Image (cartoon, rainbow, N blue to C red; front, side, top):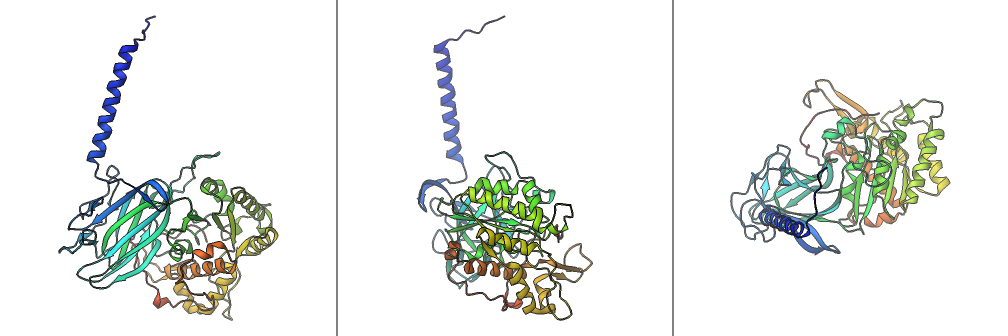
Length: 470
């Protein structure tokens, strides 16, 4: 057998050559990288990496990366205009480098940045030195962050918000990944990037800054079914994707881990709760709302006061072990009226099982079942249709037959249900209530907002597919 002898001087020389080569490659990468990684102290964190982009024509602000209409997203570059959408730049330069240019479009456009999982603080500068603007900002799967921001002719405004982005990997613990459904793999919230949608009648984006949030930010985890999930496709929407816009920037990040068609048991089995547990820190909240699909389970041990309650108690125990704060939410009502204009109860004993469990364990409980009943009856059978996905045929591509869904909301309905959740947070006197925006008024379920006052320009249509579950 041949033997390779160890020669120490030659080994050290080869190691030195390798180290020099690695240093040269690393230096070349940072010298030629198109993305600026600006090291700075921000929001209480030392040396955190910031991502800073200056949009449109004109001078580039120092420390920022210029983004023009041709800046399309690639994984190698790690940022750019995404998902085959397009934008145009300003034709005349303005006054200051950061605001002298913008990107705009007469159709919604996406901008993505490749980022690891976490909570991020986003700062967006909007406006036009020479005209007015109106911008809507959504994140990931149509998550409402800024619903309508207008600037006057020649004015600019800065908006800031905190959001959560994620991947399907479970770091630490028994399980490795969340078991995603096929329909989830193409949406915008299980990938490796933060995606912002710019919408509205005249969006004008001057600049974007992105910073990792520090650990003082409280995360509000949402678990549940299709009435909670960030719905990816128009015209459906859920309260979970509306509620981020009600919280103060820099204090709360909403992390929506609900999914259409889920029961409490399937959400546990697919490791969605394991993913939440892996991220949960002391003082974070976990909202739990199931029941719609659970009532379809007909096994010997299934039922509201059998397996459902038992599994609910197990979830509560795990949340408490992590120092989290469980908040139980009763199932939102379906839209079904009797001859007297009153809502017909269709969810069996599931709402009551939640109420009993909350009382037994002295937990915060948001009775969305009761409040939504009041809200629907206040709207009446005819007007309440506007809160749900009811549309005539041929309103959406490939849908020649009418849409008549009495479980799932359109954006207006989802927003009104989110308001009820906000009321529940206040009524329970949760510490979380201190982070609700001061501009949010007191909410009365018997006085829902008018449909005509709600503004929601449609997001780009991918497909018109009814969510799983009922």
